[in-house]
Image (cartoon, rainbow, N blue to C red; front, side):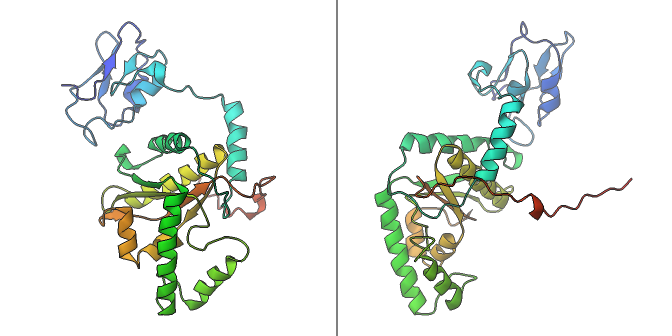
Length: 284
C-alpha cells in the first residue's frame, strides 16, 4: 500500500541513501540492488508519511516524487552567498508598522504569501494551523468600527481587556494622536489571524511561528506588518463581535497580524549588536 504516492525512479536513483536518512517516518531503505525503496505506507502522521517531502527535496538525482509532487517543479535553493546577506538585511530591517496607506493589497499577492506559510515549522508537520483573513479595506473598516465602539462602551463601564486597566487604556488612546491611527488594529487595511485546535500538538508555538513567518514574508514583498495581541484580548471580551470571525471556540489564538502598504518607509535597519544577552556555556 502506498497512500503517499511515493515513487522512486530506479534509473535515476544513485543509491546515495540520503532519503533514508531524512525520512522522519523511517519509510525508506536501500534494497539489495542498492536502490531506494519504501515500506508499505498506510497512514499519514507519526507512524506513517509526515508529508514533509524531505525525501524528494534531498535527492540529488531527482529520482523521488511523493504526494503527486514532482521534483522538477520544486524551487531550487539560492546560493548561500546571496541568501545570507539578503536574510541578514531582511531581519535587521523588519519593522512593526503602525501606519498604512488606504489601499488594498492585490489579493493574488496576499494568497501567494499565505501559501508559503505551509513551509513554516510546525509540530510533527501536522499542518494544523488555519488562517482567517480579512483582505478588503471595507470589511476591515466594518469590523474595526464595531469593535472600537464596543471597546469604548465597555471602557466607560470600567471593563477592559485582560491585563489592562484604565491607565494603560488611556495610554493607548493617547498614542492614537501620534504613533497609530487606532489602538485596536493600527489602521491596518488587512488582517490575518492564525489559529489552531487547542490541545493538539504544539498549537501555541505553531501559531506564533506562523505569525513571525508571515511578518517577514510581508516585509520581503514590500508590505508592512505588525503582530498584535491587544486586539485579540479586546475581542475576547466581546464574544458577539468575535463570533463574526467564525473561528471555532476550541481554537487557540495568540496574535493577529495587521498588514498592508506602509505609510512610512524606513531608510535603514537598526543596530542591536551590543544589546544581545548571550550566555555561552562550556562544559569540557
